Structures are given as C-alpha cells and as structure tokens.
Figure 1 (cartoon, rainbow, N blue to C red):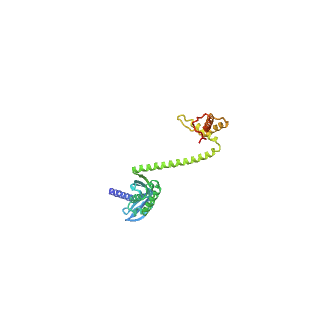
Figure 2: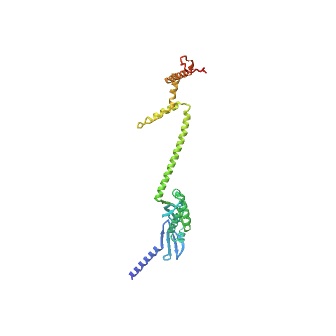
Figure 3: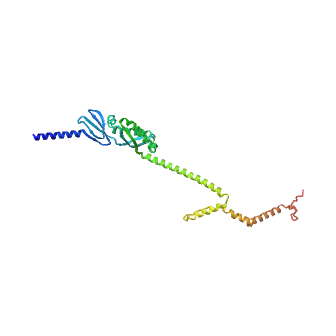
Length: 298
C-alpha cells in the first residue's frame, strides 16, 4: 500500500513538473510573444516570465533585433543594355510583432523576395555610370521602396546597401580605355593651361627686360651657368645677336675704316676713269687713220 502511494505521488510530481514546464516561458529583453488561446490572439507578452495554459495556449516568439538579410546576386540589365550581376544586403527589424505574425506567413522570406524584386526593378532603370558612381542615391531609393512595401507587415527596413557589382570582362576593358582617355584629356588640358600661364609670365618678363638690354645678357650668362653643370651631353646653345651689338657699336665709333671698304672705293674710281675715256670722241685724235669717216663729213 505504501509503495502504491509513493508511485502515485511520483507520477503526480512528474505531471506537475511537466505542466509547469509547458506553462512557463521566459522571454529575453529583445523578444516578444504573441499568444494564441484556442486559435485567437489574446495579448502580446514579454519580456520576462510568461505563464501559459497547457494544451490551450500557443506562443510565437518574435525577435526585435535588427536582422541582416543577404540578397543573393541578381542578373540585371541596366538602362543602357549592359548586363551586370549585383549583390546587396538589407537591414530590417520587427516593430510590430502582432502584425508580423498575423499579416504574413514568414516575414523573413517575404522581405527577401520583395528585396530581390525591387533590386532588379530599380537597377534596371539606372545606367551603368549611375550604378557605379551614384550608389548612395540608389541605396536610398531601394530602402524607401522596400520599407513602404513591408510596412503593413510590421517590418522596418533601415538600410539597403549595394554590396557588389560584377561587370563583364569586355565592359571592364572598355571602362579602362575610357578612364585612360579621360586622364589623357585632363593631362593635355593641364599642360595647355601651364603653357598659357608660362607664356603670360614670359610676356611680362619681356616687358621688364625691354627697357634695359643688359638684362638679356645677364640672363644668357645665367642660362650658360645652368647648363654647364650637365657634362654627359652636348648642348648647342644659340648666340643672340644682341650680345654682339655693343662690340659692333664700339668698332664703328673708333672710325677705323675696314680694308675691304678702301678696296671697294679704289675699284669705283677705276671704273669711273675708264668710263670717261670711253666717252671721248675718236675724231679729235690726230693719229687716227685717214680712211675713217669724220663726224663732220657729209
């Protein structure tokens, strides 16, 4: 008899413990519970200790922490007909556990599908240059659209980021050539701007040097001093005629005629004498032959 009583008490204790374990739940700070009693929602509970009626109440846990949702790579054709492969990531959290449980079967899968569809739709309307250079605007646009579509489910999408953009190899080569051409264009523009500034400075320097010709001689000597340090090459440097003008002016001031000038004067005198002899009339010469006619004969 005593043994039977002990067995019954043990069974009752085990049943009580089982019922207590089935009726008591502990929720963490970031968790909430949606309780169904006989199929109807009675209340939203948590965090802390939650008491349930065994076999009558059913509890669904919902986490309020931010969830990281990886969007698989999507094949997208941009507005300018360039095929790209885009991967993204979204961050969202549940702000209304009741609607997240009642209004959608699986809010994780639903949010993932909405994110994939929106990603293909939005990026398909953008050009490749915008996809590469204006990601912030595209991220904000994606976040707004996904948030509007998931708001009825009690979901708040906080961030959507385009994580990776894969471009075909041919397009990568084309972009590299375009970037190289752009860099060459900038280099030419900068070089032309430098030439323009240098020409302006040279014009100003010429205006400064013009009143004093000695300045150009000093500049010439300074240039010779600069290039004399390079011993590994031969440099042909032109000699400005302006450097010789002072020496030419000094020689003219001394008054010493050049021998070439004297010879030319003597040659001119000889030519003038021969011309005068040739102009004399042959009829006045007494030694001329008698057979030659005279100018006075009829």
